[in-house]
Length: 286
Length: 326
Image (cartoon, rainbow over all chains, first blue to last red; front, top):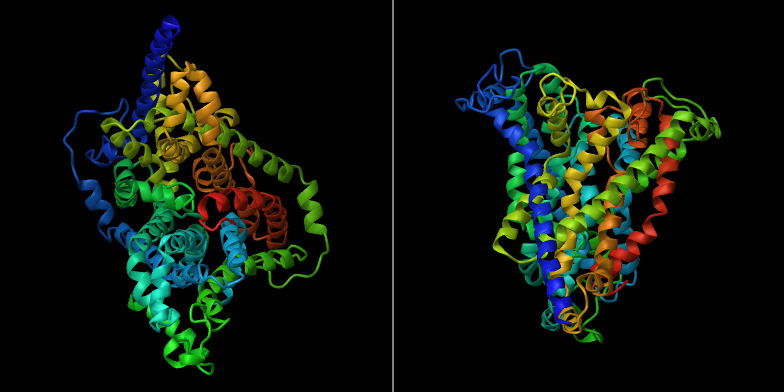
């Protein structure tokens, strides 16, 4: 008995070491693409894509200044593309929250018989493949004269994030003690007042989580932005691909632009790590 | 707060002909003060969200079911009804069959590898140590990176002339200037590795949260009874983890079927058509060749196949996420 337990303890230690080695190897190798992107973005002109890779150099922010400056032969500055991305992401988030909060509230009303069916339907729309929506939306947007405008991206992005938003908010409302709502209603509050004065203040943290998720997923979107914009509403990820063609092997500028796209998202995600995973699993994993 | 108030007030005034929705006016007549007095109230609150969702899911679905039977071209004016022609092309065309086949292959291989590796990463990551806090934050990084940017960075790393991968492989004795995206097999390996790099962390973080939520007592009891670590994993940890594994697998499968960015940027479907998954195929047929009818027929087939997954998703996510139990 004692021998088996000691061998199993030895086995456990070995397993822990193997597990940790695997974990940290994965994490460090996983950083390589990001390190490459950042290091290349601060290399002086001329050595960005030098082979063998230069590891000792004078870091510079020239590449960032270059991509953010307008003019000099470029049709648009990368700053404008980042602005477009921000407008579209924030617009989609505002729309998703404005329509999502009342919907989530309705889905918790106790004598609303359709609430379970509607909750399931909203969740099931998460399955809807964007590639199937993009052609009809392309045709609709063309007919309505919305091609290459912000609404052409804001409305689809809001729609695709609504399942996540509604499910996060709905489960947060259900977790509030129902007695608070009851007490307010006994005191004569209307449904609107209950939402406005009782539920909304308690819901703010969940709204923030839902909003950040929507911002991140809208900011990262590529297919719709590629299909529905030409120049006016073009977002940064699409612009980056065209930069790659324009700048050729000017990897310093390309990676500086890439870093500018990724940096705000990385900060948001790392700060709200726990909530991100809970949100992206529709609250199924806390 | 102001922004939420405006549109709702607008929709609520539509119902103004009915008695106002408040106890103040309902007064003593109201026999059941704790229920919503108007049956329409929840529908009014639902309406804006339903409108947006219908506009972006149901309306496109109706459009593609309609267009799939026609030969409309985006630039060529109005076409005409062509019956099942598009579906016959969709089903009999060899490159369409290939596209569906490799899509399923990609989803299956990527999701299975990511699940196995995600679990293997979650086990050491679940221990609540200070190092693991840093580890979990680092874990999240690839998963937060804009997919289009990730694909572009991979493409630079793999560049045959200037890429780090080719150079450092050369240092270790591999042939110089290797073009991993130029060969179908290695292109596939790269696409799967990119997907794994980006998405395994998502699964690892779900399973980590699951492992951390498991109660310690059963394991302790089993240890006292002299169970081996494998027995404890097999009979205690793994069964308790099944719901989390199911959630991660379902969500990841859905996302994998939506994969577009990495293929579009890294290989564009090439070399040849070897990596043209169905998402790329529909994009090319519909938005580059402007053959809307055929693209919509492909979309209908894809939509029907995917809708088979919906019941699984509803059951697995609904059961865990819903305090009311669906």
